[in-house]
Image (cartoon, rainbow, N blue to C red; front, side, top):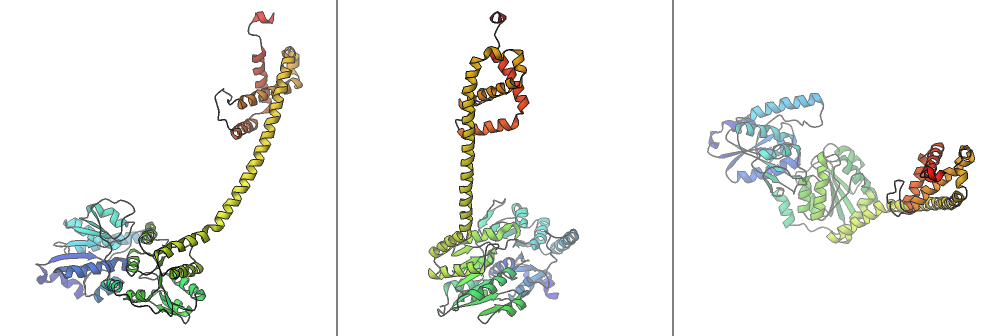
Length: 481
């Protein structure tokens, strides 16, 4: 307790600049914050790191020799109403406790829900604060307060534009990764190593996948799983002799240095660190990450580095083994990566393409049969048209008699004449109003079919009779006489 609060009363720090850093959340939040904190300390700056008591960022900050200040931050999104109310109360309490701390300080926020109390305290005290956003899809806290920040530092180019002063800087990584990149360990070629890494907290899906892969991987391979504390016991129990299980490591660069292939989630920091080692990697984005930010990270890393992306719902142990083989055939080259992606795409979508082709052929056959049927119907109506025109000329006077018009035979005859004229107009490229229609036989057939389905036989007969009367009636009384 004393170690947390002594920073407020240390009078030797009065002449030095003070920076308060919010590093609350997962390793992707606090590890870059610690790198920046150490750099600032080397430049004669007092650095205070905000942490939660009993959480990993508190333990890691003390291991790094950093001064800490405890706050009571709690996630707000996705919780019940009661938890949201409690989160608001803790937010107010944490903000109030930070007011005296930020009075003569600047703030640096490394994303996450723990950033909000520091941002609020800086706004109340009118102090400068800076955001660091590692992901391509900015978090909600970043989007909400980016316009108020002095500068928003971006680890990766953003997918969407956000308001504010933006500067793409890359992600600060630990010095040991830089050393690993410069001093790559010579690998023992008598066997290959596949490293499964689920992030600072582990990933059950990645652990389960690793255990499936160990059953079908060739004998000259061994597996290393960084499982996380939560899954360590059951993963260790199911592992075989060539699989090593590590619950957590403070030195992941050592495992990455000896790995030939890495299978990992695509949190911004972990992915950035993996790519810095120039080791071939298969990214499996966490599908439930907010705004699917891990997928956007992975797609960007696959574009610039030696990496491929597999969606969680598509990945299988066989695909992992196949992709591993292709990577090693090409010695992890970019050419090998693209060839592997092409084969994976062919395997995933080959059956789907065949099904679509078969469906297309069946649809085409059915359409051809329908066309032949409608064409036959149209030919019959065309013959009826010629027959009706001949009869019309021969029986003009008979058709005008009232007795004949009342008979069923006359109604049927008049109906077919009207239908014939309708078909004739369509063949001439006109609709019922005399407007031009496309010269498309399928469209013509469709219009005929729709007309037949909509019209009622009696109604059409009545209208056809009236139309025929108007067509054949004399224009004036003199012609009647």
